Amino acid sequence: MNKAPIKGPAKDFKTKVAGLRKQITGLNEQLHALIEHGVSKDEFIRRVCNWVDVQAGSFNPMYGISALRSPKASGGVSVFQSSVQGSHHDTPLVVAETDLGPMLCFLFADVIKKRLADTIRESSYEEGISTEERPDLIALVKEELECLEIEEERLILEAASFNITIPRRDDSRPEIILSLALEEAS
Image 1 (cartoon, rainbow, N blue to C red):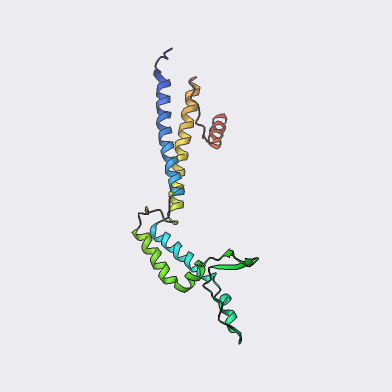
Image 2 (cartoon, rainbow, N blue to C red):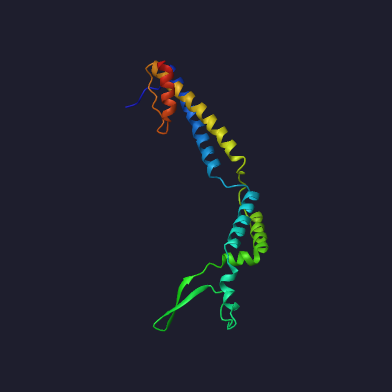
């Protein structure tokens, strides 16, 4: 069974709404990208350098070498041990792994920062948006999105006044629908 092509005002409303929905979809994708997209390379490098400083600050250099303070110290301890050893029935076991990252950051912070920064600069990391710019850009897109969604809802209501039914999008925002319904009722 073939349906007759839509003509007249119904086609006009549906065409306008379809155009708005295409724009709404594009803005939703843009908003998602703004929210999820990485930061700028410079900010990424600053964050990595800060992380190195935090790691270095968490290292306690006295922990491994404090045993050497004793007059009877044998020198058999090491801050470079990568695991805590134990045994079970005379069988040596590794009881726990130790993260050497904080120690390495403490000892070689400048070298690690430079190497990681160079790696980021040379990488194919896609330039992102700075944290300072991001909120303003998100606000602009949200504002434009809201204007389009209000326009879409106005067209749906206007079409309904001509007995033309246009279903709402699944992700239509209830606050926009209600605000226009209340505006129309008053």
